[in-house]
Amino acid sequence: MRLIELLETAPNFAGLSRADVEALDRIMMEKDYPDGHEFFKQGNPAETIYLIVDGEVAVTQRHSDDRGHTELKRMGSGEIFGEWALIDHTRRRACCTAAGPVRVASLPRSAFELLYTANSPMPHHFLHIIARQLARDLRSLVGTLRSAIFEGSNAPLRPYDGPERRSDRDRRKGERRGIVTTDR
Amino acid sequence: MIVAAEDFRARFPVLTAHASAQEIAALIDAMTLRQVPAGEVLVQDGEPADTLYFLWEGRMVAFVEAENVSIELGHVSPGETIGEVAVLDPGPATATVKAEVDSRVLALSPEGLRKLDRAHPTMCNKLVRMLTQLLVERLGAADELLLRHRKESEEAAGETAPHHLRDWPMRVYRKLFGHREATA
Image 1 (cartoon, each protein chain N blue to C red):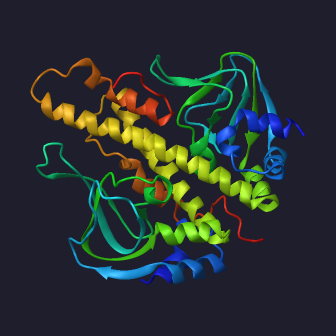
Image 2 (cartoon, chains in turn green, purple):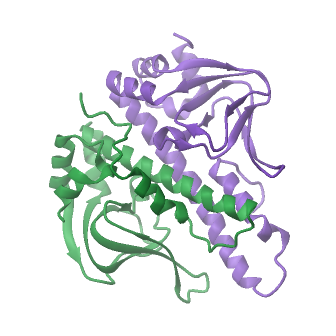
Image 3 (cartoon, chains in turn cyan, purple):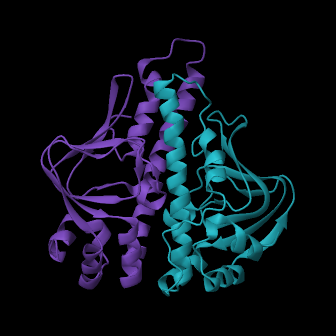
């Protein structure tokens, strides 16, 4: 799959207009990466946002004693990672590594900010999509916490993930809902 | 107008820091003012939710309940918002929010948000950016607590977990609602 096809077909991006899709396709750098490619390390300055076009990316966190990593979650096609770079000028809170060969599109924060301040509609619509992903992450974390509180479940700690995530996505498949209007 | 733009600016200074009087007026115009008498539930845990509320006056409490156990997540004061996740990703509410005293809220429904996006897209963008920032901060605070919990669990392995390890899910839950803990 190519970035343009993903942007045109994935439910996540249903709120984007034709012009937004074309602008994103122009500005994002689409590239194939081999298995094990490290997109960023925990602690690195956060400067780029990534969108998985094809394949999977593993999100891991370093153990406090620096021996080994814990995998927090796997992300797949249509999902955005490293999105905190755009909002919170901060350091990476986790490591992101290719789990098998992947095709990923990247967008440097500087390019995003330039478009954002130029009042082009695309970065705003893109930010809506990121905000929605964050809201889903929070909702999913709440689900995990609730089972821990009320059912005494001792499920492994997986921030930003949980059993609801995939089913959430399935439930929404084909659903064209968004707070972005594209018909203006 | 249901409330004066300058009063709104005074009550919600972060959101309106870079907003013009016209933008604030457009936001107010997209909302409805609702009275919530003391004891009334504004948002019911698990019920469909899609509206963002700005607490204008009064005081509310957020909590979750199961099997006669009620866990308080925090209080909401004027100048704070309720339903940040709901407005971005409509779905079951993640907690119950009830008025402790006679209160008034400004409600922004999905239709209101679309109206705002048509009338003043720049204000809509500012709102989404504020919500995004809020979610990032809360997820970040929750993440730090989860990391610390994992570290302490590793250290306490084999021993009876101290109290603060057993109540970790509630503490993380509170972080997601913006609750600030005095002690680490």
